[in-house]
Length: 256
Image 1 (tube, rainbow, N blue to C red):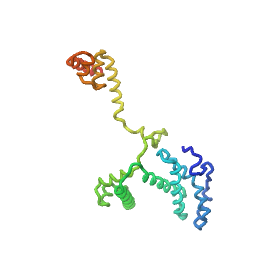
Image 2: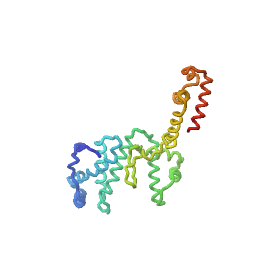
Image 3: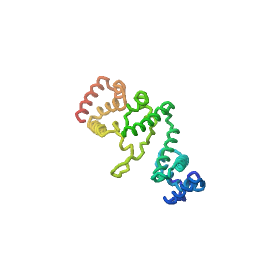
Image 4: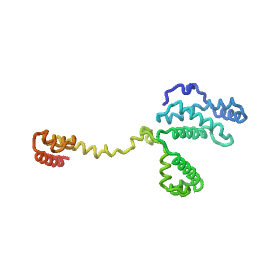
């Protein structure tokens, strides 16, 4: 949760909350040109902006900046809201505010995407929406590429390029109610159970070897020494090191 009480000079703990009836009256008054009503509508929905930016507070962005960008989205939704539609204002405003914040994050992303890739991606998104309306189903990348007269690889690369990077600490939905993060669902082949068991088995096997055999294997395979270096350290011939190493490996293999 965002702990700031004051954001952009606004005391968030004292923000007003408008009831649906009050909001509708102010919107009607605003449409008639009453600027004071517009200001009241904005102030009465700042809590909505505040609740939305909390979903983005793990991106490392300045909270004040996100709040200001969210307010721009709010103002756009207020100015474009159609009272004639049977839709709650918040239902209309939330996607507008989120969209404005995402555009800001995308344009200020440290991962720079070339202008040409961005243009292809945005054209692909427009074509996708058009095909969905036309066919009432999600189009394939191949269909989108055909409409744009571009290679499939170019379309895939462009769409991937504009995807927002996610933090591994981003929470994911879970029906059981547990607080799972993305990192909890990432496979780690290096530290898999199989490798973990093998490591334990090798350590137990090493402990069952004679001290000299254990030392030779440690120097050879953990410290990366050559047989010649090991022979010089132990004061024995390289042939003896080779023989002891082979014997130790055979015994270790049986234990593992």
